[in-house]
Length: 104
Image (cartoon, rainbow, N blue to C red):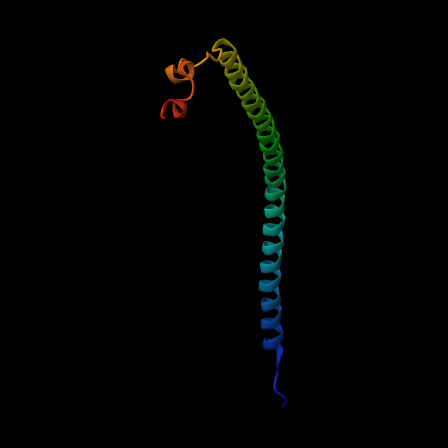
């Protein structure tokens, strides 16, 4: 009598079913992961764009402030120079002539 392999066919059906169910669970998990990651990545991209805009505006404001401070420093320096007029130096040796001539 030839050996019967009916039990092998039944076991194969159970193995395929376990792989199939694992594949379905993996596919559903992957779909859920994609469904969660896509909106999260959009939010991250939007945040990056907003951060870049804020950084640009802050840099522009800082640059404008630095330019104003530099202009004020120059204006104060020029105004101080105008008020303090150079006075002629009072040096006694200038009135007597050159000292080398007095040496004899």
